[in-house]
Amino acid sequence: MPASTPAPDSYQHSGLKSRTFLGLLVAQFLAAFNDQAIHASAMFFAINTQAFTEENAIGLMPILFYAPWAIFGTIAGWLADRYSKRNALVLWKIAEVGITTIALVGFYLGRNGYPELGPYVVLATVFLMGTHSCFFVPAKYGVMPEILPHHQLSKGNGILESLSFLAVILGTVSGGVLSYLYQGQEVVVGIILLVLAIIGAVASFLIRKMPASNPTKPFPRYVYAPLVASIRVLLSTRALRVALLGIAFFTFVVAFMRAAVYMLGESQNPRWDELKTSAVVGTVALGIGLGSPLAGLLSGKRVELRLVIVGAIGMMALLVGAAYFVGQMSYLIACIIGIGFFTGFYIVPLFTLLQLKAPKTSKGEMIATSNFVNVTGAIAATALFKIAVIVAHMTGYAGEITNREAVGSGELRELALNHGRPVYFEIRTDDGQYLKGGTKPEADQANTLGNVVRHLFDPTEAKEVLEVEGSISVKTVGRRIDVTKFDTDGVRHYDLVPAGKAPTTDYDNRRLPSLLFLGAAVLTLGILVLLTKPLLQVRRAEQ
Image 1: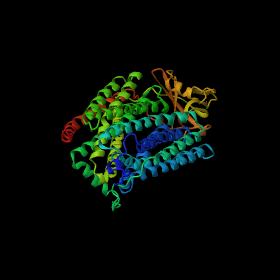
Image 2: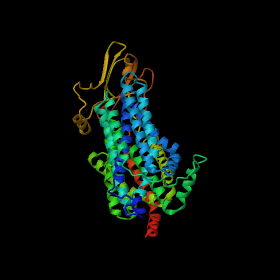
Image 3: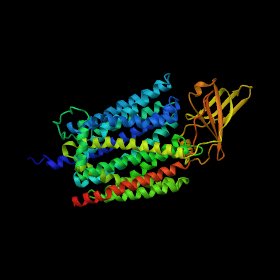
Image 4: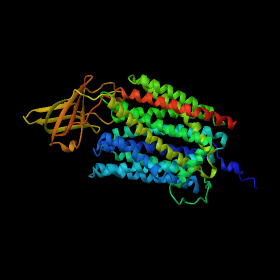
């Protein structure tokens, strides 16, 4: 072999300081950022243009994003093994440029003569970004053992996960902040996302070329047959079984926590808007971004599975703390960040274990199958959350609001919005009187970053809040509506509904977040009991 030709191992493994690993980090960071930024900005755009109600827009987002993972999962795994993972990463980063271009077009249409079509175009990009992630993630995690030697894999995964969740934080918060700053000018948001996608696509070309792990792998005769076969492989050995179950629970608990924090925002009196809620949701990812690199550092040159146990214990303790401090925001935020921190301890060794133990010729397929199971976990978390809420309402734990009274009926003369949310109304009753409620937004409330920060941390609360139901919007000024009200702890709530329609039942959900956090702690205790013995067995077998 000539002196200039690298040895096989050095050619295969680039190392933590290589341009290949750097290119992967930048590409995946911007992919994760755009995933969440499009997710948040599409939701706000649908709400601000009144194409969807807040409840429907929030509920639709996870369905649009995760549906492709269930539909295309097996094909994504096949492609990641059949062709070079580097080619898959580059291809999907280029596709991301196209997706963000579509989002830009949707933003433009929504504010330039097509207020109904534009939001649907932007919402379609959430599905497309879910498809992008479905194909990108198996290649991203599957390529790690091809880039890094085994003794650097734990540290590399810690860095990868840290940056991934940092991107999730920034994307989630930035999607809300940019939508707030550029409401009515969302084209600017689309341009920013497009530029970031282009930068990420350029970075992906830094990843060196590498051969396919299984270039002769045939396309499955039955699309979902590999899924069944892969699940059997993953369940056939203790190490893979532990990794599969542990990662699925991670997805479950993150989805459940996200729903619990949204419920926390909804249960406030007055309730938080989406900007504040998304900022609090982002603190979970902040904790994971801090805990993941430390987990990789503590693992050293091995897979330190004891960190999974430490992580689960820390998550459980801080979930109990969150339940206790649910009414004290500074302590609650500290607990949520801590939950994320220990989640980083929990997840990094499990991802590394899956990468190492999956068969070399089907790592992409194994990771795609794990993603499919993860989607099942996210769906189960959503279902469990809804069941918990229904049970709390049925049992009276979160009781129905009973002090509602009719205020009046008449022609809607004015409905003022502040960042897409109704804040003031005025009706003319049948006897010629005018009935008003809420607070008119100030004319000089400029969309500046300073106002965004003040909005997030301003301790003042509105004393009158509005809810609109049915088809009521600024477009329906002049139609007849009915108005009811109820008071809770000094805050007056107005419900505006189309004339003759009964208002939706309201519940006092303020005690519900504590119950949800405690429920998550109990579930974490269950996974800790289930995984501790097999984790220690796998660890002993690896020594």
